[in-house]
Image 1 (tube, helix red, strand yellow):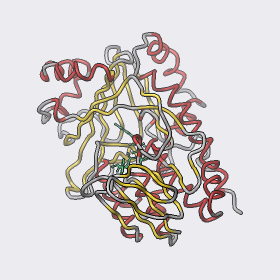
Image 2: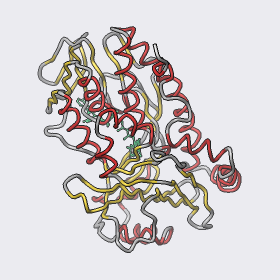
Image 3: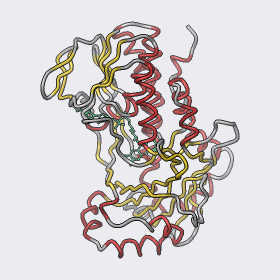
Length: 390
Ligand SMILES: Cc1cc2nc3c(=O)[nH]c(=O)nc-3n(C[C@H](O)[C@H](O)[C@H](O)COP(=O)(O)OP(=O)(O)OC[C@H]3O[C@@H](n4cnc5c(N)ncnc54)[C@H](O)[C@@H]3O)c2cc1C
């Protein structure tokens, strides 16, 4: 098939690799002027790693990234442990903290290696049947268009619900004198209205021995302007008072400008396809990064689309793709909606419930096992209909 992929992000490049591997003629269009990664760190979960292995980028990701065995969080003032999820025992039952730039580099190289053509400086504005439209010109016709344009896709009809809390992110060197363990995501909370986090993200491809951390501070979207107006040193003092171990991570940070603000939204398309068009990744479903699944979901969508196109043609394949992913996406949407306000909201009651009831319960079997599977990404099968042999 002749396939046009809109968006060279995580889902788009993964889909391009997998579909080009199967012999389709794939062209990926992105708005960027030159290949360029954006953002800070993320966690690749076991389900996402499995897809990266199929793409041929798994081993390189394991070398560059930082293995994570635990997600750990404490209430800042009481020291009470309110998040403690272990990944489990299997060799690949771990997360890999990775910088977005490193993941982008690996996926870009894999897509090109598989034979996909990547066209930069093509900002998609819409589609006309089987053609993609750009600010100047068009391309097509394609047998299939894959919409991987992310949360602001011009091709997706999904209108998601903006979430009240976002976060500022920065990437810093991992300090030699850090008291934090490098094999876990560490967080500190003040009620649910403030959260500081340190995510080890391994190294960049061009500097493989320099280990990095993504640091983040969660705050209400409406409070971002006030945060920027606060004297930076005053915020640093507040952060270090909440979490003294955060201090070495702020040593090289000069000001607000070193941080990037990210806002989040939540929502899912009931039918992430139209005739000749498949939506994948954030173009089809969005959630807060609280469960660390968004990039993994985009990879799973790409893999499901590949398997569906092996089994069927045309709209039948798209129906198969959407049906196979439906319950996994729905389950994670619901769980994300349930978990996020415990860590990012103005609620006074939810953090009390979290600290005194839910957190103690979560460390007892079988809840501990359920949380492990939830974080790994396979609490429910990611694409059951496509796993059954024909
Ligand atoms: C702060 C933050 C932390 C996160 N942490 C995690 C985590 O730990 N684990 C996890 O799994 N997920 C995490 N996520 C979610 C994850 O980043 C997304 O779910 C994932 O990137 C979605 O992939 P995608 O391919 O759908 O979109 P993207 O990766 O956003 O890619 C979209 C691509 O489309 C291009 N594009 C957009 N519009 C156009 C256009 N009009 N024309 C042409 N090209 C266009 C963009 O340039 C981009 O290259 C996090 C998200 C945020 C914001």
